[in-house]
Image 1 (cartoon, rainbow, N blue to C red):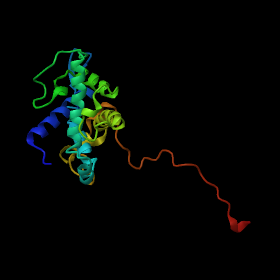
Image 2: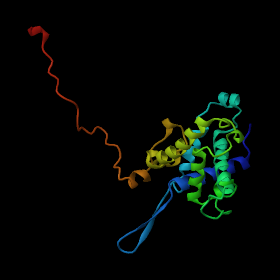
Image 3: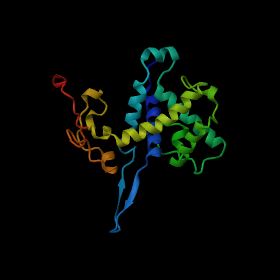
Length: 213
């Protein structure tokens, strides 16, 4: 099935709002009464990393067998189900906002903290599992696994070298090149890989000379 432009906008808006909630930007105050903003996952476009992984995770033949149009779209709809449950049960802590992510569904209308609460509702399986799109329909194990995966992929994309690939980030792995030092590495104070760094190379092995025996 060919994805429509409206569908693409919906998917991107949902994942924009997801990564923003998982790793939000932070305001850092310095001693001289100045401050700066540390970028979060949304600012570093980690949503592209998630979408790339999800879109390539299921072969086309398997998608046809499972009747899955797009795993990313099915996942966005799963997040919306959690948001609808949260809103209907009146468990959202903040008012609904309608101008955050144009083209998105109920999940994108929630405040960042409420988006995380919606995910918690999904993790507790408080949604109607039979009302989901394939492959999540009545699939408890996959639902729970995907909620973990979304968090893990967001953090992995943020703190890995992916943000340093720049214009090559969406290419195949063998075509990517680091164009600048990854932001996540700087925030984690990781100095980067040390090539051929000789620290511990093992123990000396004393092998008896069999000719002498």
